[in-house]
Length: 194
Image 1 (cartoon, one colour):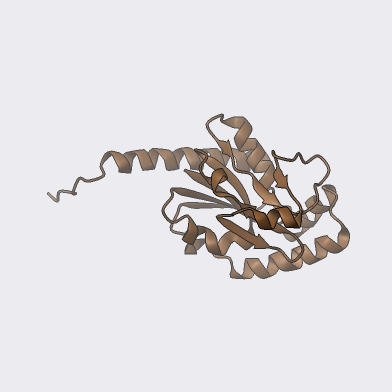
Image 2: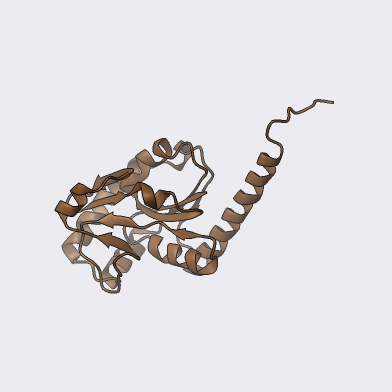
């Protein structure tokens, strides 16, 4: 199963990912590669693989994008991890369902208010001019983003607390696993009408 956390910058994707990874040892951390600078507290090979633009171009990615200044990508080796969790920018949204259509996906979409996004980006040390351009870019992406386009089960959170989001996400994933186990158990059987 591949668990995808979508959201705008500052939506809480990384916080939720860390909560999920610490709550269940069967989850695997899928690490994206990026050319952006490390933020305070981030660790190379844990939060991201931080590389130069030249190094980024040498690697092969299953999916990648450029947000205007920095590149992001996910290598194939990362996607082979069991029960992988990946935090993905909205820029990846259009390609995810197409690229991963053959895999069991669970989509978690974090969509807090604009005020909460701005506050979180300021708190993590983002530059004011970058915050304004990121909010503008993400607003444009949000206008195109529609969860109903995904065939995979999805859940959306708006302004819930991080503890509530973690609790509901774990329940959503567990319910999805049970439903898949049930469907797989009866795969190949035709339904009999009485």
